[in-house]
Image (tube, rainbow, N blue to C red; front, side):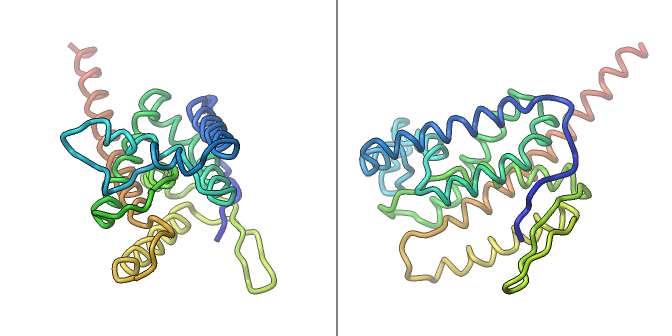
Length: 226
């Protein structure tokens, strides 16, 4: 199931979404022309290097969000961000969306760290943060129509599906894969728990922000009435 685009246009230019996409592409270019192993060693999240009393070792929870391991990795991540990011950015506002994005990425990295404790394998990618965007999209826009490519063996079909079907399906597949990875002997691969953690963080942060905004609106209305 591959989402192609949503049918809900925004009323503002998603400058933060575009900026994040541009930064990721620029950093990936630096990876291609530079010493990739050195870049990963310094900026990727390597669980064994984390020291909770030394803040410099915690920076990779953020810097790792802008690294990617290959063309397919970065294209798939930025594709999802482009489709779902603009609506969520409009809902939060530009600056709050940036904070939200980074916090979701950190949450995803933290959960993956828990399941990879002591590992010396670099963890990198925007997947956790983008999963947070998907979680927020599910909360705010479950009924939005998403144009989706559905493969059927050698054939495929493009149909419109509600966002909740696509995103819940995506989350369930990540959850099953994450559980399966606990007992897997394979090293490396996909950081499923980062996806799960980021998605959950995005959904609940959107819920919290929605309630907070509602209370703020009520308070403002009360002031006007006085």
